[in-house]
Length: 321
Ligand code: SF4
Image 1 (cartoon, helix red, strand yellow):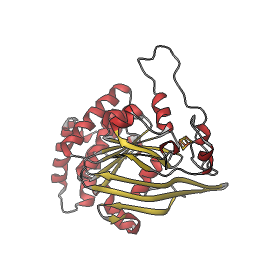
Image 2 (cartoon, rainbow, N blue to C red):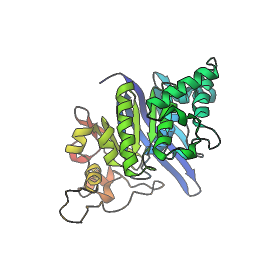
Image 3 (cartoon, rainbow, N blue to C red):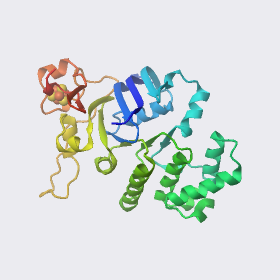
Image 4 (cartoon, rainbow, N blue to C red):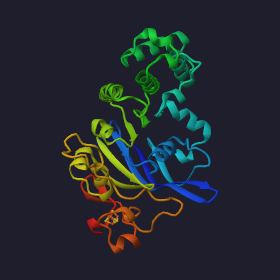
């Protein structure tokens, strides 16, 4: 394993509402290593996107980090002021969102986005030089240089998403957080985009946190997988052990509910119940109301996140203390 680039300790994020406080992320501990793709998966509302936004300190109001530490390359992000965080974003940590049309300015050409990104962080770079870099960059992303002067609406969904990756590459970001990057793409474009992302990741040794509800995307790209449920981490392992021998009943349920072409009948296994209300989460293990293996203890006590085998962590009483 290479050096840690990001260390999250006991992170807690709250969203106050009129009827109570939603704890969107509850006591998450996670380390991300340089050059890896970490898949962050779970059902909608499990806290995975909140965790990504918290790392960037871009939580939607009234969301607030109320506890814990986010240490990026040795710097505690919670101690940086707004200007220091602004300089860090883009230059060191970049985010690729679900729908690039909401991130790219429809009135700016592709070249304007990339040139502005480069010159915001490196004002000494002349416009002509930044434009030359932009042309080289989109060429590497498989977009012809003459598309540099296109507006976002003139590009396909896959091209727009590649431009978003290009904005991260323009500044050699150390960490890319990609939040559901393929959700807005059709399956053909998704496959092409994932191929290209895999190539770029290997070529530039990119560190990526890949947030998705799509287990197939994780299987394609991730080195390790973290599974979240109701604001907590449930399991963390290398991708093959996690898919071959998932430990946590929630992970097993997630994997069994993926449509499989080899199914002999049309009965897809589904997980019973729904994710809990996070204003009043279940006591003990948060998964106990849906868990087929729940024991009396599960309702009373929250299981600790424990390393069961080297590199394979889970939070479940089925695995002893
Ligand atoms: Fe199920 Fe208990 Fe494990 Fe929770 S701790 S996943 S309820 S067996």
